[in-house]
Image (cartoon, rainbow over all chains, first blue to last red):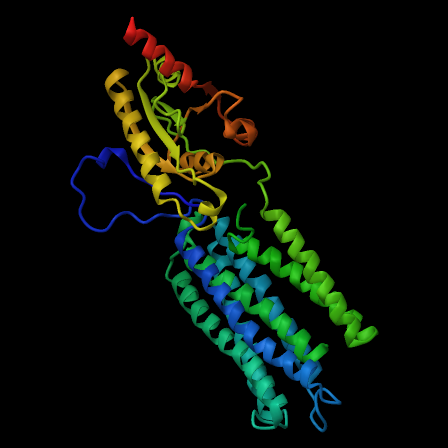
Length: 207
Length: 223
């Protein structure tokens, strides 16, 4: 995992500036960075899930969700399908650029962005019509905290996808792995956001 | 041990696995009771964790992409650590490069002293030692064999170090130097065999017996 590259050709020359950074050999720095970031994000989500399960299992109210509240499971299921589809489209975009298909890259990125934006729009719409707020019991607080935290991540993902899409339309990115890191890294993040939603959906709406 | 999540393709694979697991949990919970779904989810998570752990152990043989030179130069990739300055290795390099326009890259993996050091990424000392050996061996190759050489410190896993080197160095053949079989950890780990499985290049294995070389050197000096 660890390695350092030191060219002997320059070993005897006077060195200026900071020493060359160690670099993990099979994973580039950007990808490693997003993975470490995701690990920290999992811990953040873990804290929110701990609070959720504390309320649900330890406090154990007689009904969940507490009366008279109801969760719009079917709307959330449709929204889940939309977000899950976006993981397939971002993967399609990356597969396309790996094969040098720029058109596929653009199409995949635009579709992913649109699906993500639709998800966010439906979620905001759900908040507007759900019939309770974050102030309504601990249930309301944890519901808005968990889904809101995830929504914030979708928003960040959309920002990253926006940059990637604009760059794709400007002719950036190429088939070589080092030439499409700008899509690869948001792609990994997007899959993480989708996986987290699957977990949020299962725990909050289904179980 | 390696990271099972290295790229978007890996992330997508895990996403599909999570999705299928979640569908099974959702369907089961809907058909029975939420508690059954929770138990099934716990089982699926345990199995998924075990698969991820198993995937991260060891490495499946894979094809290493090669960079081709095509300029008529013979490029030799030498992989060695403690044996990097061994006479047998220098002889082999000399033999391989005889009457050829040869370019040599010496890769010296920075071996962590222990597993604890490896996990703590405490390899600074290993890098320093590897660099010292590598620099001395490059000087030896250049001065004694009159060949052009450069050196790099590689990954602590020799096979990974070879794969990394081949991405930037258009090697025509590879020489891997190890201790004798009784003392070589690389041979115990199957470094040479794995390299032969993974890489479509001629690979020469050189055994360097440093103890015998030192004993020979002392005997020559005393006589």
